[in-house]
Image 1 (tube, rainbow, N blue to C red):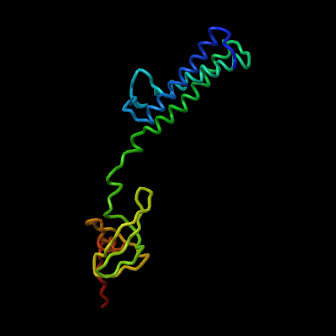
Image 2: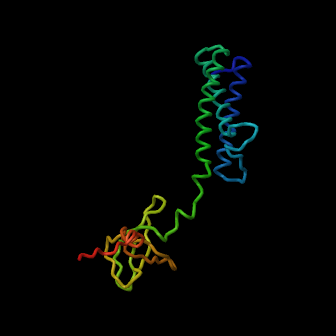
Length: 196
């Protein structure tokens, strides 16, 4: 093991061990979920960085500084700025990851994204007249399946494109999707021309 030769080595090694131990402790507390919660990375507090990023900075500052001084025989005045820059760089990467992972926009489910009425799908198991079948649809980037019945007395064969009208007790009511039906209903109807 590399020996500690002066107080600067002791401080650098102490920073490394302190940062490493506390990083490990926060990781274990997070895994165990003991009810100890830290502030979010975007909270406006005294430091604009998360505690985890600060601990990573301390670990890298101490570890890289110690290695540069002992293994590469750099003087403290040269090793400290290099170690600090590397520590800041790694801490910035950690901080960015913490912000990205704790972004509330990515974890909030919006009900309007998961409403079934109005959703397009395809019949995957034929719907018999007066009976039920299955419809496959995509929502939130995931393919889903729902039991379905036709809105009228018609039979809907496999592969028919349908639109969900409503859902009652887990069974969707669907009808054949006709993209031109809305154009016919809402468009101006011209009177037939008379020849004479």
